[in-house]
Image 1 (cartoon, rainbow, N blue to C red):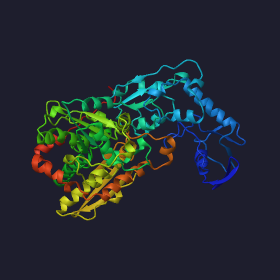
Image 2: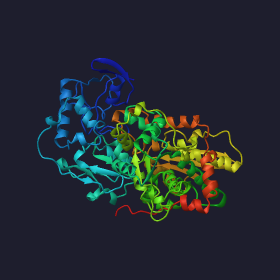
Image 3: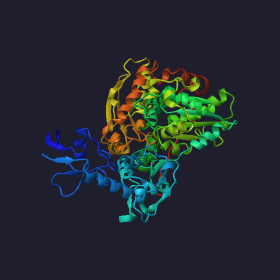
Image 4: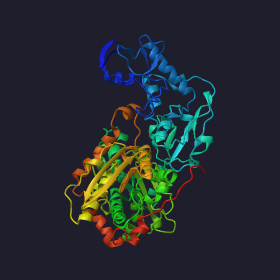
Length: 580
């Protein structure tokens, strides 16, 4: 332990920590803009500067380690004036249309200006750099007029092993862009949205489709169904300042009804259906010498990454559609047929934690009802749903708890845990174990594949056969794992990969949190615990025990892997060029 002083008070702090972390031991908050712990610790923004006795100039707290005997001052007039000047300089080249910005209220630059008493009129006058507005992709908008060059998005993209954006030009002309100034739709962007949740301002945002949803809701000729992903119940409350990890499932359903949707369905049903098809596919591959390891296909960001960077492993991908697409397909086939609805008059809206879902709905072979009718019509992120509820004047926190509509609303714990990394693997193993042994297994919690570690491995003995599995989340970890698979260094039967670190609970469409929360709070773990708690408390915890799943197969599909099931619930993939 080092003995240091912070604002003349003595403290003991661990050797090797940064000044910023040491200051937190004293219960003092030092503002940051560019900092994300373990991801972006470059001291670029200079907002976190502090005075250190004996130092010739102010020091960036996030980028310098403490030393024994160090004396630190966090709020001297010199420090406060430096921070204010930095903010004034940032505002001088910033699009200050804050009232209409989607990040107003959650913008970290805006919050710091408020805390330090910096007004937009305080900004220095002068030239404005040229900026780019890029809306070329289905999932996001890039507006460089609101960029503060913190480079958090660049670090996030590098961590995702894609690195399609970075700083271009020099000096005053420096800006974040793709190589050769290409638009995002011409590079190997996987649409994961991790750059969006890392951005402290409104420079990167998802494409908002709230107005499209409101238009179809108020069209009397359309039957509008909404389906909500498992992880949304663990994160939507954050949009309304509720504690992290609050399960708002009941209030969420109530809000969606008040928004005017005709049916409110739980996408856990789609997850249960995915398990039925995926577990069946895994068993068939293992027993009949199919391509192994089989790799899950639930995450569209991961699937796109595979198509770009591991096209040789496309045969290893499960042919199953994602839960979103399966449920959309069944809504426009089984559900429409059951209720005498014309598929073209049914509009399926998904609420997802994932910006890549906006891309996924436009993929080929996602039209089970035929005639070019998409399985899913519109995707909203968690953030968009939060804004939609606020716009409608709904008092979310005081809503009663209501249940999903039963047609696709009775689900299992297996479907609920899809939102956490390892959840798909665990859910599939529960069904595969019962199927292979021919009897219900009591031990259904596969602890080895739980947790937020980047890569997890386990070996399970099921029906006398050893099944080797691995789980990876985040594309950096996926790349590391798959390079070993490609080289033959490791062998598995089944691999689960999620595009975002920690899985869907940390998806690119989830509520943004300031850097201090993202850096010093186990955001992924807190959100995931909510899903595991729900699983533990549900009466049904295996996908094949769902009465709706049984009904769908009895009435419509026949059995998992049937010809009709393949037509409606399965898809294909294609190798993609990295530049277009």
